[in-house]
Length: 457
Ligand SMILES: *[C@@H]1O[C@H](CO)[C@@H](O)[C@H](O)[C@H]1NC(C)=O
Ligand SMILES: *[C@@H]1O[C@H](CO)[C@@H](O)[C@H](O)[C@H]1NC(C)=O
Ligand SMILES: *[C@@H]1O[C@H](CO)[C@@H](O)[C@H](O)[C@H]1NC(C)=O
Ligand SMILES: [Zn+2]
Image (cartoon, rainbow, N blue to C red; front, side, top):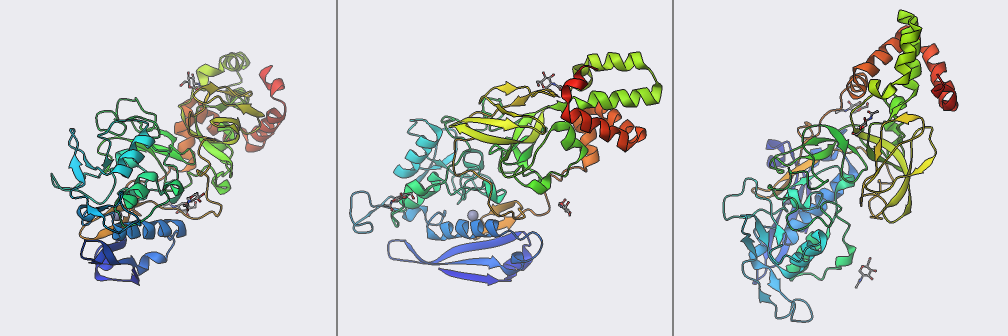
């Protein structure tokens, strides 16, 4: 394997390409025996450089050169009946076929069993689905279908590096080349689609709300690993299916520096840090009532009105459900507690919703996402992350989407506050400034430490 770090013509003419690979020699039976990975030199410097993403890029390209390639599928060999591996194997012949829905799939034993296990289905038609975007009918691509194997190292789009997995379907494919002995138990868990059944990720089911991995509309929520907040979006590979994608900036719950102590954070009870995760929530701190009283008293001096307001707070402070960062700690498989700013640790029953003392609104407790996959954790070193997408022609190339085409920029904090908390809350905020910051602050601090006093208002 040759590794070139170079500014090639291809790198220069296609600024979005990070790296590309090709096998350059095969033996008499079609096994690749030499290959090259070219990493575009200029992509190894600059503000967007990310070590982990670069490692993943190289692994992705290596896997192409080792055999996960449309140029090599037809030379894969069946070595199941021989030992040692490599001696007297027989050609597998054509391993890619279309299923009855027209989806091209790899049909080899380990790949089928990896898919069946992953989706918890015994369907024998469950081969490894291949990306169909920009692929002429009857031809195949060198990537897994993003809708079904989102997050796989061999998907056509690599997202944020903390969400990319070297999954069992990919290792199974390398095993089925017949050229390698693979320890399949080294696969990382691919949370995406786990146990969701044979039709998971199909165009006909992704928009019918039957799976919590997909979303509809364009709201804010949580990436499915719950490490990041996200926005419901699609991309060309998802073909109209939508998922919560991390923002380009500041969506990691596990990064303490993302907690800017903004007004939004104070009102929503968010806590950022290594053990924080994303939850669907519309919690709103009840302190808002107090600020509002202050405001209304000082602006309009109408005591009776403010009293009335504080008695029907839910009417006033109804806020949309979105992704929020709260601390979590595991109590067992799929069992955990959460902590919101100023609250105790409280049990969060998976699949249920809870209220938090001192807050209005609800927090949803995700089912089978937290405290179930020991290898889904934040990276221990905080690195800048950026999304990357991959295209494959004429080589297996890896490109980046640094222009933010699929990762939205987060609106400025002030804007977010206004939209997230609604006009009522925005009035609250605005007037808090009018009333004077110190007055508002002292109110907040007092209520923070003694919420009972406040609720007697
Ligand atoms: C396969 O990987 C597992 C997990 O790392 C390890 O415990 C096991 O010993 C490995 N098996 C072989 C044959 O290397
Ligand atoms: C991300 O946030 C940092 C710090 O707030 C800022 O300097 C940078 O410009 C932001 N990047 C984008 C793409 O918004
Ligand atoms: C929070 O969301 C729930 C369900 O979506 C809704 O019933 C409730 O009124 C909301 N509460 C607040 C305070 O916004
Ligand atoms: Zn690729």
